[in-house]
Length: 486
Image (cartoon, rainbow, N blue to C red; front, side, top):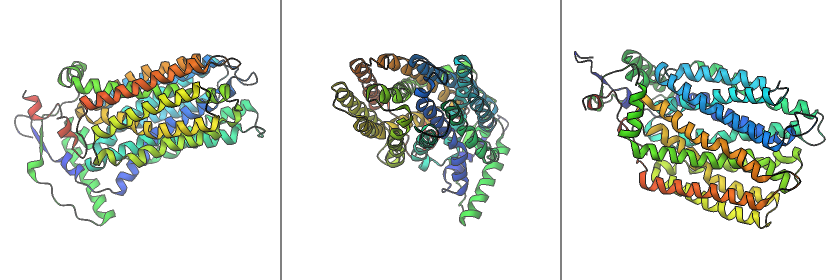
């Protein structure tokens, strides 16, 4: 550091020039579990929705099942905003450990719910833990994954939400299968214990991850950042048996470290410095969240009310649906780094929206069965899953590092506020089990499809070229010498 307080750092360049190594694999496993847990939680809630309506369990109505999903999503919003704010101030590591602990306790206690209000409160707290995970974990992953891997790794990690969905589907199928040995009131409670078991298994691995060197660098802890990067480099050279070449000094970043960005600076950066990017991030997050929450949280109700599928058989239909969602980001992910962000994001949003509108019409006309409905939804969400994952990728890489977690939290919150109303609205459109109305639900599908197409058009106009590009080149840190001198 010179007398003006300026630090010349090679930390970002050194992190980006690393080859893929066991360190990155451990990072992905330890942090990527956040999406697995969220997918597991939401799928279990969706699969047991019909069971919670039984008089021998909690006796919820369809509207109360939808309300419980909405409350969970509202908890995610509160958790994302508060813990995202803390993550930019206290660091990524402290928060991704804290938020996992909150989720473990609340989700485990959900199994002990005795009425609607106890169930809602615990779902709210569990949602807050998962919401906080999104902000801290997305930030840490983007800041520690090399730029040439970032796009498809981010999409793959976000796609593991559906691995959680598959795990939950398997668990609920075994627990809730018709004629199974378990009492229904015990079976749904055991379902909510699956997530905490997985979270506990990953706890030790997460505790050994380092703090983000980029976060340390911009918060006046350059020496610690250098130590973390040096340790990672030694590990890569030892385990991969390669020799890393020194990074040229001309790639150094000059920064004036700060402890944190005040909220006024966060607002100024989002809405004055990057207004087009803010519109883009909000649009992508809101549109995919509404569509996903509306369709997914009411999936079991559609199968049981319109197609007469027994509640215990719903998990069977979830396998294909979840598999399509999981495979989409995995198989399409590399195209976001090669073909480009703008091209792939717009294509996936628009295509999935158009296909949903067509499928909705077929549903209204009574031309589908439970099987063909599931097949078509699986195809649509193979594409839509990549689109949704790219929304998280976008908001996590197009804003400066000092407010990255808060930016993720803000746009995630906007998306979830819109999405939180989806389950309640769609459950109301479905109506009573004895008199469901496909026409009303069709117009709901058309609305969701229109939102996806609109988001794709916004990406065409405001999309950012971020593929294979260092984060500091996409959005200069607020603490960079150039930024602080303007």
